[in-house]
Length: 67
Length: 250
Image 1: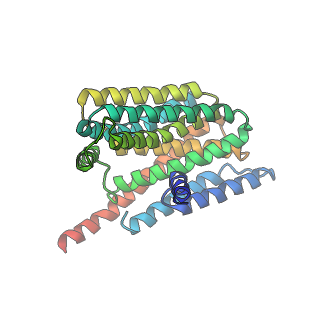
Image 2 (image 1 turned 90 degrees about the vertical axis):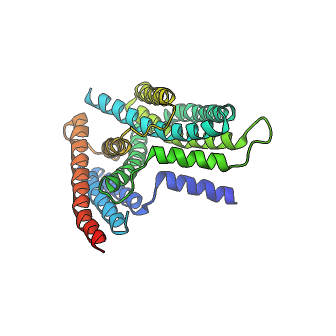
Image 3 (image 1 turned 135 degrees about the vertical axis):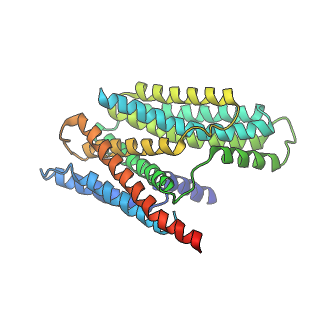
């Protein structure tokens, strides 16, 4: 069982990293982009905007916690 | 043309950073514990990595290109933002710089204090070298397969990674020590910007976006991400200065 947990933890750290909010935010942004484009709405601006907000939020949060 | 240059640059720099980290581990263990078991660990990790890439490559051809771009773009974006966040925090003074000389010294001390090999095979050296090369190599393999498959340029991406590894190993062997002169945080900053930009571009295409300016949008995205990152770093540095002054007065 501990091998399964260690394996899952490795992939979690490898893909999600130390700030799960960024990964969750990206998932929402991708879903939003997909929905908009499949309704014929121009959505190229959504991902850059999401990256800007998520990066600033994550850096500020970690800086407040002392890095 | 511009996307080819950026693809080569991103893969080369990302691979160079990972190769420096893997080489530091291998050198630290090899110098202290001997080279035979260490190099066997490196060879075993290389075989496992080659098997992963060989298995992933053909499997990727079965996946529709838009799905592949969405998945690879999302992965590159999460990697890119992780690298970028750490590089910004380091450049802003909120996180200590990754020091390869210190990593080499601590790795060497750790290897020296581990139990001495009982038989011919030193499993400590083998395991540490295997794990170091496999983990750092896995990240390179993901970037190579991701970049190569989404643009149909696996050869270019693999060539860039191979060139970076050969260069780092050649320099490492020549100086026989950690590559502490490599400006690692600057490299991570640049790689973070490139991975994030490619991630936005391919992920967006996979989600159905038609980018204004087509491939040229990658350059605009790289400029945007770089500008945001530089402004964030400057903001952190300005915020850090009064904090340091207050700490010094206390």
